Image (cartoon, rainbow, N blue to C red; front, side, top):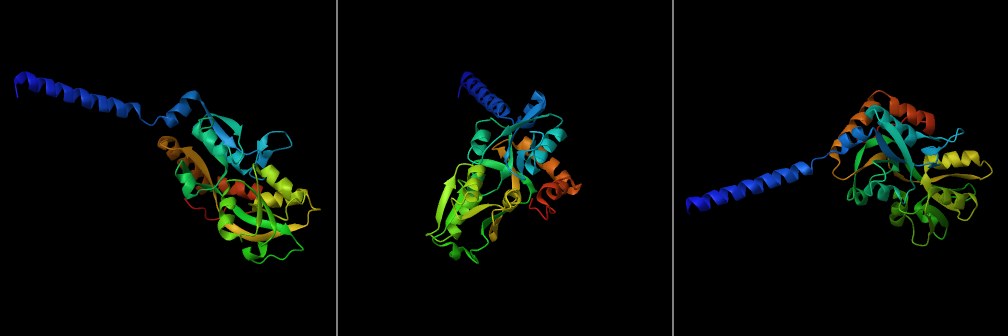
Length: 266
């Protein structure tokens, strides 16, 4: 190879290497710094799902999820931009960058892990079937030929497909308000929902003679993070783990759920 040709090849290799380096630099994870620079963080929260997220007497969002979202913003030293989300739109809102994090009673499963990442858990969430006191239900087989309301796309919706008999008539609704309303108005005999959510609704409507029937799953709540935003994920994990150790998250559980948070998975 001639001297000229060798020089050209070396230059080409150097340019390629530099290009790759620049490309890698351009893809550097700036998720945390971006939040710090704009001095605010958009947090997807529920506002129709007591006791996790609902409008308080002062017409401001409150609940376990809302308090956790505010805690994250406070520890980051930025303004909390609380964005109401529903069960169907919370993951699309994250993917389309309408929110930076989902703090909205989000359970973790294999399908969701394909599209978003999850922090450590921050609150307990027992999913259960509730129904009339005068109908005996001892197992999922006893739900045969009954009617049940559930929110579409939730963990409990997916679980019922596996657990319930095929003759169970499942009516799916687009949000939790509609699901609970269907049950409360006796449009369905049963409802599959978070235990704390059902307890709060039944406390407000004592005339509805309903009770806990079956446990579907113990599915703790996690914060949802966009894929690849590892810097933000790690920082939120640091905040949540500290809040577990110092008792902050347990105080939220006691206040809104009426019990200790227990041994939540990491």
